[in-house]
Length: 134
Ligand code: SF4
Image (cartoon, rainbow, N blue to C red):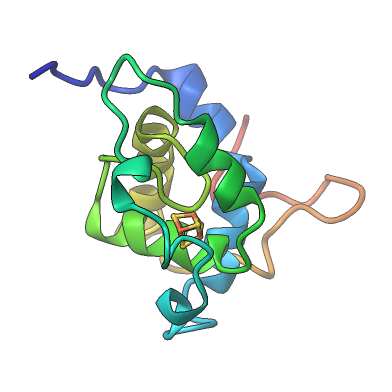
C-alpha cells in the first residue's frame, strides 16, 4: 500500500478556486437523493477505483456527463473519502480540495457565505475559500 502525500500549498490554492469545488459547496444540500440520478449507478464500481498505476479517464469521462457531480463531490469531501473517483475528481485532486473544504468549518470562517462571497463576474469579490491577502 502506497502512502498518499499531503497536498502542497500551491495545490490547495488551485483547489480553492476549482469550479468543481465551488459547485460542490453550492449544491451540497441541493439534492439529497443524488445517488438515484447518478450516471454511474449501472456501471461496475471497479471502474471508479483504478489501481494507482492505472488511468481514471473512463470514470472521469462518465462523471463529466453526470448531473449530480456537485452533491457527489460534496458527499466525498464531507466524509473525507480520498479513494477512487467521486464528483469528477481524482483522489489527489480531492486531497487538496479537502484542505479547502475543511477550512470552511473553522470558527473564524463561519461568517462566510459561500454564495454571497463567491467571486463575481469581475472576479473582484473575495472567495471564502481564499484567505485574505491572496
Ligand atoms: S459524479 Fe461520477 S462518481 Fe459521482 S455519481 Fe456522477 S458518475 Fe458517479
